Image (tube, rainbow, N blue to C red; front, side, top):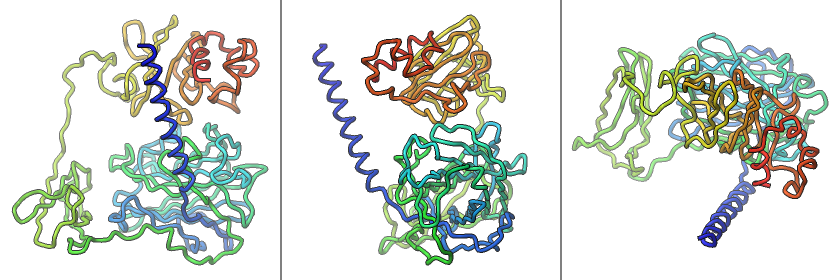
Length: 495
């Protein structure tokens, strides 16, 4: 039994290693066209308009699916001078600038938003080193409830807080309601006192526009440039050649940065648009039917839309991806208030109430997997889920099972969680990427130090062979947190 288990484990490890090698090989060939930033032609006024811009370095338009060009796409522009870094975004969006995210929580992904990641140091290479101190993240969005721009600057792949002194941003909704522009300027001295790229240099760079849903509670698609979806976790997901700081302006256009238009298979229905006007706002379902009355393509399912004119693209394919022959097709639309749930009762769920509430105490923990570890102190019991989405993976309850607080996994440590421990003052969690901790009293994040809020894994070389006192010398956090026997075992196990 034991020998069979070892063989299975070796097989799994071999498969994982093979997959890792294949992924690494894939990343080596992941290349795009450079994002070209040109010198500003003169004084730049940040007003959401490109009148004073050199737009020759345009990257795009880009979209997530060619059939949505002109409906949901983004074009990216960059400039620089001795004082500032400038960015401009031109976005087609049928539901523009809807986002309820607030800067206090940093949840810019709650709707239409922009994320930019780059290294200020050309010597970091492209992609930059994961541990580079010169990596910066900028998130931009417009809060539709507050009716004002929101922005957040962070540093390194640990997402340390960083000042935003002098950052200017203006969002402007188009008059026809079918898109928006965003213009931003940030001083080089705010980003770094020592590092900045020079003309003619390349730096690691990626960016994205998130297309929000109509309620402003999340995004439904993402337009990535120079990166894969999980670029926020690892710089290995950033593509070459990054961004290029052109010494001169009026550069030649690069059509390779554009998403190619959608093509129609020979003999198939050409790309067309279905246009209609809604008498009131509601949730819309839309489908296409063949002459025999059989539904062949579902275009919308309970999609929230405003009252007024609407336009939806159809690429001429059925739901199975097969091109359909030209003939007469009909479309049918249903609009209503949607299905609403009414809470009746809960079963085997420790949240009170059993559904999410504004104060964060309702419902339960992470919705991925199961509870992987528990801990307790005099003030309560702590439960840890292996992963989360929507609900916090770390939950504190009182002896009666009532939720006291919930907390999310830090973005920099988004990985499967392993174990936790508490000394009454702090709760510390270990995962495959490192250690993080919160205050036991209220669940607020508690950085280990201002410079290094997390303990990054894997541990130092030779960790497994070190004596306990030597481990404390290598990772001082263990001396400050002697109660972490579970974490100590975890570190030993993965070294």
